[in-house]
Image (cartoon, rainbow, N blue to C red; front, top):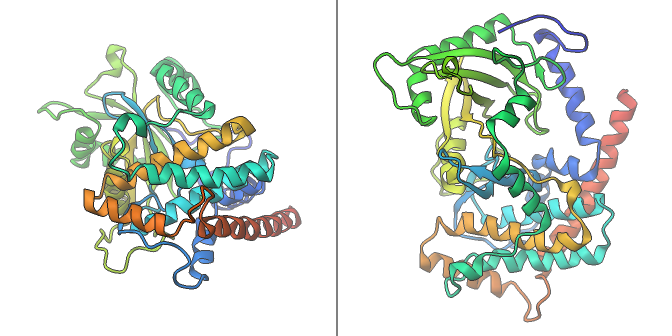
Length: 406
């Protein structure tokens, strides 16, 4: 692990101000980018609404930050791929309607950023509730519940299924000896951070890591830290501690195998409100891990809650197949299908936590809030429109502040 200074790459003591500026810049790129980085504003708006504005679903683990960028192909430990929710930082036991509405807001702002007509947004809202309700209808077979994948999903799945460690190596890892290239995406660690990372993996804590990564412990097995760097990644997570670490587990790299690429991410308090009677881990990292195991089992099975130098962190192995959907690919022909498909994915994540009676009751509740016509329910449409208007205004104000600062 190195601390060599590179042009344009900040030293660890300069990191905080650079990250704050980067976060503001990312959120200023589009209204959809602003929505992705402002989950706290979404829940502030919800908190300002009168009781009874939304259907109150059974308390289950929810994503809490259910936008387009947080859904995509995920691999399990054996490399099998399926579309699931891929970021559980905000995960809590709460109202499942919050995930549906946040996805609706994300789709609405993505459609606006892509300059799609408002009629498409109206049809997306209808497809959103149709896809979500379908997940709770036990009268449908599993085959009929499989929605036709829209193009944006097909493209991501094709990339995921054909992505290999060789391609990931070219994107992330340089040289004959595996290393993380410092530059725009990766910044140097301080000496204290480097020591903390090395000590964690090479201590007894590393045994738990090896197990969650699918490497059975043995008497003479070991974990060697090949390299580590601060990872400039995401939008809402910019400013938190986040590290990319290359590991050689049991000497597999020296035998020609690929290194293990691990993501270490600081866990902080969720903005999403939890159900009043819910019991969740107080430790934020354990909350995220538990939420992932319920909402996205493929991801949860590859995660571990831990403490790094006293900080609550979530550790997970990155698989080559893990990708997010590209909102820029959203087209008029694809948008409605995407809304239906992604709502079904979110609905299935909720439905699998419920028994048959609870699924039936939640479906009946949703239908009671819906008009007899095929149109989207008024509560969903009204909230999507009001949220889009509020976030557009906040986005423009954010851009004004950003421009003045620069």
